[in-house]
Length: 316
Length: 189
Image (cartoon, rainbow over all chains, first blue to last red; front, side, top):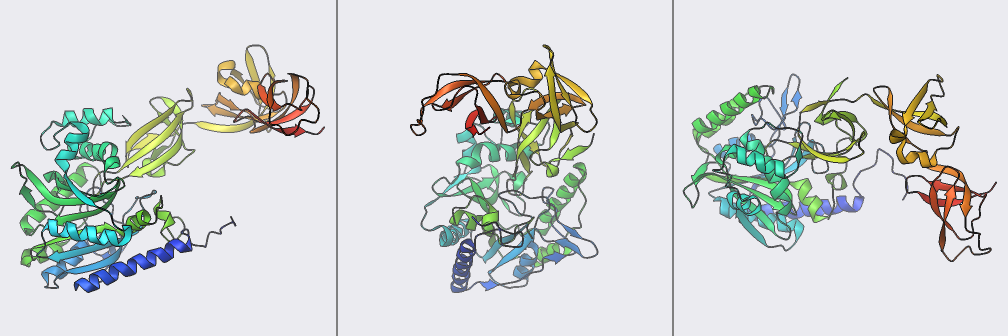
């Protein structure tokens, strides 16, 4: 193999051609569906409050956006109807085979769609890249029960901690309930998800609702109306039945900021324009964000994002 | 000693874990959705040589280990200790047989090897990747047999035993890979 010099693309050109073809297919799909393609700013004065998302601050300007969600919801509240875009988004300190601090998010919102309708469409879009593959959905609670014998909504935090310690050596002992849940999800459950199917995980714990509304599941247990898509053990997409209640949204932001302060993380300004938009009336809708680079990685049988990105972080 | 955050973890970094110096072999960043990120880290405990797999919460920090690799000349073995010298400042270090371990099988006096120092004292010794050593004992060679692929054991001047092709003889110098313990080639003298 000839030596490759640093200025050249990290991905083989054949992969970049496939990437271009798949993106063209996605664009044609949304055009045929009649969704409006939009373009929202990557640099905004406010950003997300999620304690575990690090927004990159640009001194004097604001923050590079971790997702186009707030701006897209302002458009929805303005009466845009269903919209989509492929946005470059930024997340600090996320670097690895499956992470690049700058990546492409395929994000869309469907006015009037239920999460079930949107999941069916997410599967269709994923198949544009992955080809024919069947799909199934599993409740978060059932997965914990099957793989760990635990009820994640009701068991004690001590039981979660015990299970986590049985699933690998840990360099820490102290964590909150959601951290144990997330650790168990990534260590003990994710590797089994989507081995030969598009695997939707539904009905998340209310503490992990983010921007999804809550509802009661078939057992009468409150859950978040949120879904995630996994394929071959890799998380591909995150969707919500979107929360329409501005007061509840503000309370969640405040709880995030409280958590940030407890963890010693920097405070971030709340996006008041976003809250005002929700307050003025977001239409009933479901939305989803899909990691485009990861989808392409799986479509091309690659093992790292670097194989499908022209100039990944560290080579840009 | 400095502390290192998981964001700074990379292979080769020396850190303290549960009181022992370790070297990081692999570091994988794992992040479920919008949740807490983790680093799945493979480390080698430099005292026991055991490989550990540990999961860290991303953003946590641990102390660095005062561990450095130094090229040194192997001087001699006094029966109890192996003696090494830093060629720049002639400073000498002694290491026990336990510290030197299997490296002893490949060490020839005056050869350069890598001594890992922990808090200034030898922690481990690695021979060069390739060494050229004399065969002191092996079955007689079969002349002309350079192709059949058969092997026989041969003992080297330093004590290691390697499998060599049938045509190689006592008294010859051979090149070996110390990592695999395998014969590489004959060395023309």
